[in-house]
Length: 425
Image 1 (cartoon, helix red, strand yellow):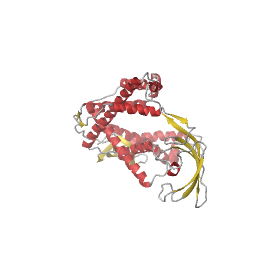
Image 2 (spheres, rainbow, N blue to C red; image 1 turned 90 degrees about the horizontal axis):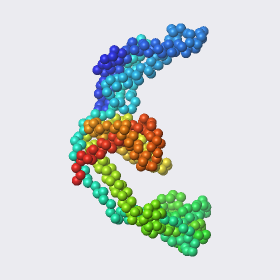
Image 3 (cartoon, helix red, strand yellow; image 1 turned 180 degrees about the vertical axis):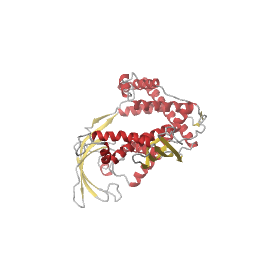
Image 4 (cartoon, rainbow, N blue to C red; image 1 turned 120 degrees about the horizontal axis):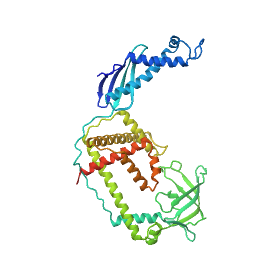
């Protein structure tokens, strides 16, 4: 197909569901116009022997800087013409197009081939009256009691123990040093903290804690098995010197009105009602999240959605960046790294498909988000976080942040619509 403007021609070949090849020609007249501008710019700045700066004749400038000027023409006209072609033909490009076979000399047209990845066009399967699992949103008395028990434990105090030895559950800080009985080599002095009786404690330490008091010291030996996961200890017999630096016991408050007051409530009954209300809201949010995931997945499973590789790679990089904060920096095997990359790619593909499905449904239903909707959401965020509205408005003043929030609202509206149209079973 040809652009109706004489200065630009283009033929488009479909290489696949998300790939187009564009053969573009920028007319000799348009290339000459830009070449003339570039040549004049070079001439105004050129410093050549025998001429004052900017006063060299144009033919001398062209002879000296001809290839550089041609490169400048190419660098300007290829992006400009490619943008016009994509816009004219409503091609939604993904990533940076790959340009090859560039041909240009002064006085001739510019010709090049560009391969462009695009967002896919796909047909939506039926998305109304989806059958979704009905989820239990009720909160039991046991749920409330467990939450209050967790709150009680969080308000526990760790008080020094003075008149008895260590018991299970005590928080102990100790100093320990080992010596390899075979090599006689001393190990570094370590200061560690343990909870007496915890299953994760070193068995050598755990076996000698009970009954010791603050300030007391003990000496013992321990033979570690050859398959112990700690390589520095595996298969060795170590003589330890251990000193107890401090012992604290955990004292938890009773479940009564005093506990409620410590949490800012008038009474235990008021605390229970508040906990129930919060648990019910949490259950509703969790049920909505699960239903939305189920609904979107039901649509994805029925649709054929090819994905552009550049978009998958970019989204995979984002997923990996988020995962990196949760992973150890060292010690991962090559197999573990490859497994993490594969999972990141799978999640990236899922993210993109969810985005495309939600966007497609929103378009089909004519959903839109106005600036007033965005302002109302910012106000709600400010109120929920007890922050000044003006400060929150400043936070979202940047255009990309407002657009991001607009996208979130559109997704929420679309997902709410999907759930409202579904059949809960």
